[in-house]
Image (cartoon, rainbow, N blue to C red; front, side):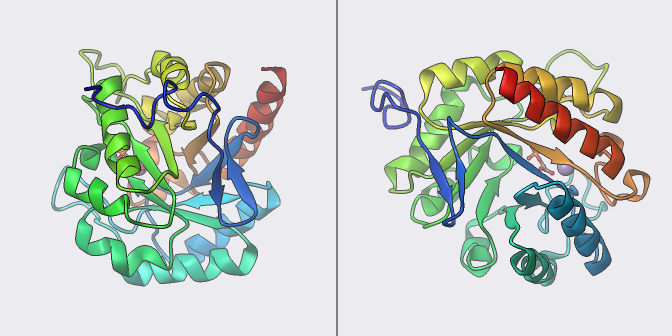
Length: 269
Ligand code: PEP
Ligand code: MN
């Protein structure tokens, strides 16, 4: 039998609209931007980010509270205390929350504070986590693993879909290749191919996709022209002081310019 079918265009010809709450739709007729820090760091940082997003009409704030770090000595996130603050500020201002869930045990405690569960690159073949998220009534943004093929990404999506949760957003965030002049190789090709093979929306993550601040805008624009339904980007008031991924994070001025350019490009598509 086919390794995946429910997420494929053979199963469903029309592109899927993913409703985030009752006032936001991610899908073929919209372009959705999500922005915020790699990690939630403090109440002041949340407040400043929310102000920035509201000012720029960005509907979703990203920010990790459980961080997958290569070194166990790096900052690993504020956990549930951070998520509760994150949710408090965002709910007050009408901003949706996307944050990474790393293990099955976190799903239940995080559930009420999250609008979109993010599955990170390092967990996108954690099949038990995918099974559990398949039983949840919230959308899931599924990142491509750093050495995952396109069919493998779609099979991971199939785990979630076949367990009953059809609200899945695919995310290209760069893959690991022989090239070492930057952090990851943003697979622009994958965006076009995923849009052809699947009815699910595809979001691009140019921050992790290249990993170097000065190239993020160029990669983001390429992703839009390749057909992405939106972008997720790392933004911080003072990127140099960020607790994680500062080197690939835009400041507010850079971000504002890029939001404007991406909106214009989407109109041209
Ligand atoms: C992140 O979004 O900060 C992150 C850890 O992403 P990825 O799982 O793509 O590395
Ligand atoms: Mn990050």
